Length: 85
Image (cartoon, rainbow, N blue to C red):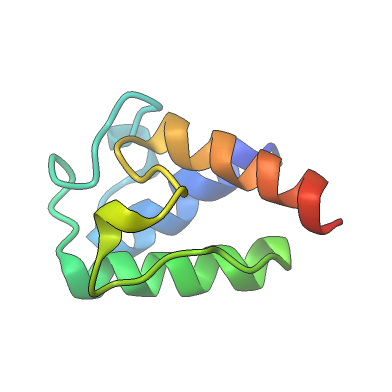
């Protein structure tokens, strides 16, 4: 399963959506992910990919981990895997 497929699966699970309803261009807001859902997604991503995401739920815009879309999350995971691997 590709990184993108895994991310889509995680996000779909937390948004209670079918993975087919989640695309790379989807934003978390469009998918109905609130701040608690975002934190849960980040924890699931960290566990799934064995990485530490530099994300502060209190100040999400201050992180260099881009959560603006599914594609940006996938790019961030790939970068963190290279840095932390």
